[in-house]
Amino acid sequence: MKPVSPFFELDDLTCVDVVFDGKKLCLPDGANLAAALLAAGVAVFRSTPMSGAPRAPFCMMGACFDCQVEIDGVMRQACMVKVSDGLIVHKPHSAGGSDGAI
Image 1 (cartoon, rainbow, N blue to C red):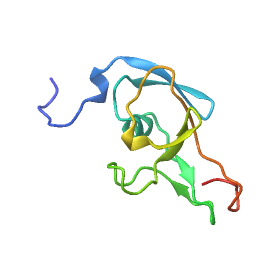
Image 2: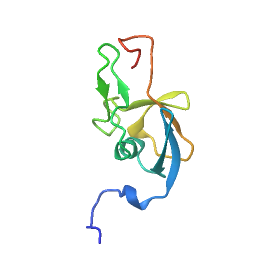
Image 3: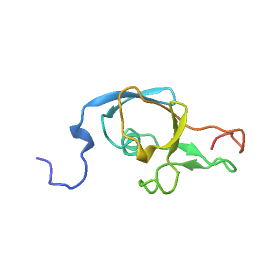
């Protein structure tokens, strides 16, 4: 029996197909995208432009931009997006920085 928790349970949702940087993942439908990607083992969402340092979700409320990803060609904060079937998500890239990533 699961303990009573005020937190959203990712295990209780139906999985849908999402692609992250070419890798097919089965993520809980309707879950927070940043949380679902972290739970699926994604550790790096983007890299900083100058040093190339890895970034992943930090604030989980849309304030920090560390979870920024490209979804269907649009830059979005993963913590502000719900998982839906067929999402295609990429780590963002730019012309600046040591490795060309944001």
